[in-house]
Length: 74
Image 1 (spheres, rainbow, N blue to C red):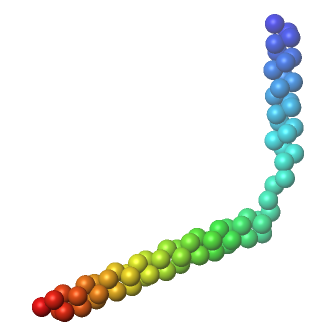
Image 2 (image 1 turned 180 degrees about the vertical axis):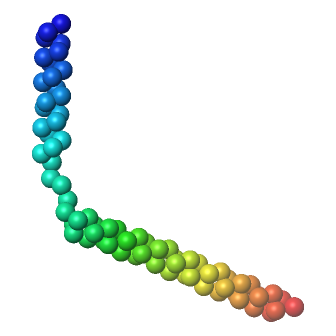
Image 3 (image 1 turned 180 degrees about the horizontal axis):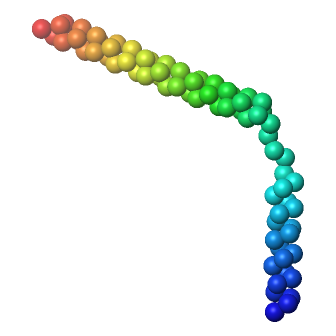
């Protein structure tokens, strides 16, 4: 019984030491990381918008080509 308690105490102590020793970010580092994340998200959104615009342009071209073909047939 004493061995189990000692083992649990050792595990608890070891886990406490490793969790308290990890490097903590400063407020400036957290802010910088948040700004970087926002910048990345904006770039992704911009890319999505560009892709959507290209898709619309392609659709418009296809519609124009179909309209020309239909007018030639008539």
